[in-house]
Image 1 (cartoon, rainbow, N blue to C red):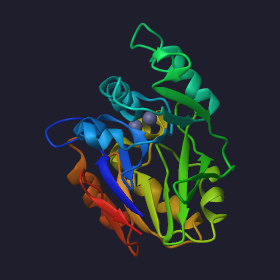
Image 2 (image 1 turned 60 degrees about the horizontal axis):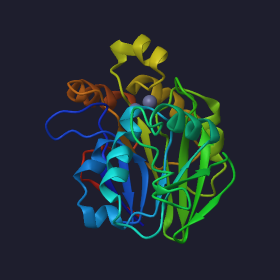
Image 3 (image 1 turned 30 degrees about the vertical axis):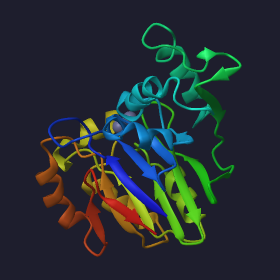
Image 4 (image 1 turned 180 degrees about the horizontal axis):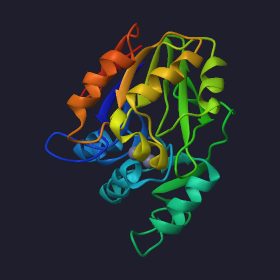
Length: 254
Ligand SMILES: [Zn+2]
Ligand SMILES: [Zn+2]
């Protein structure tokens, strides 16, 4: 399993892109601005897109990818998300006002994208792997995804604050080799983290005591400009853990 990080920042700027993971060149988990660096040939290989939640930093690239692929693909790209997230995307993004509804283009019987409901706790089989959504706690309904194959297991929290749902789902996995998890704000911004439903290093360190596995941690979604402070605070908060501050272009291999 090869997971390429197309974007993992909490914002944009030179060298910074928002959340998107390319799995085995065929599937995306989230479709933030990182998608916009893919070539047309790379976009054409993507058959499935799994979305964690409706925020723009996780779906902006989907709008542009759909537009790029118009008239170029023979079969639709399958967009997977929870029912509530799909409804938000349809009502507020692909609504003919902000962007065309590509599930009706070029025509309804031959659309560019199709919608598929993800149910937390119910596994999907995708390209030889098992993908299971689990509930997290964010300002809008959100999920994370666990991706399991014979090579190992990877999980991505999506955007989340402290919640037992996250740890219960992860502890239920038979193994967990790699965990990509949100650390958006510094400890000093703990109130902002609480209201915007993201982790700080200190809070993540505390919460990780609930995890029975010892995965390698991949830390993501750092607010631009806060990377160095988050790194300094993480050294203290995650003592004893193997971890990496993710960067665009990194590859997580299992
Ligand atoms: Zn979010
Ligand atoms: Zn986000």
